[in-house]
Image (cartoon, helix red, strand yellow):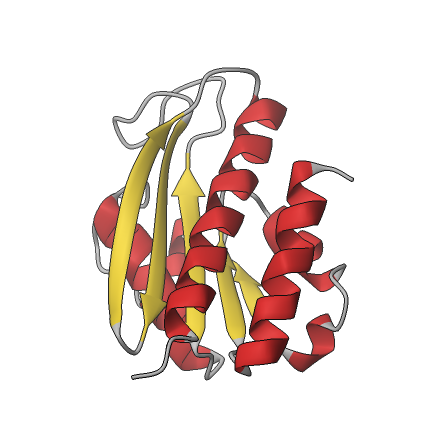
Length: 159
């Protein structure tokens, strides 16, 4: 089983056990992240849905991203908060970045911002991946899933 498949299976089990719901806002990965989640066992019980916001206009109008570069921490955080609110989920993940081969918003190819949003808080991280666009997307999905798994696990802790 692939690393992505194993992480998705664990995430699904944790989401079912904790009764947490998940939402996704993705740009760079253009639906590949939500597709991986949708293929998980029992995903209908915990996956609320996804917004694939590839254009800046959709990020601004649908997800509430302010007028900032869309490849930025601010944009990733706004995307996560926007999709969590829009889809009424417990946990949301967002990814935005530059797959390549050229730069965008002053960011080089492989620059990726990821964010998590929960009722308990929000966090973001930046990655700089090397490789062809397909490799950047794969690495982005792996990191996003790890962040989501961590968020669902933390959300599952008793308060």
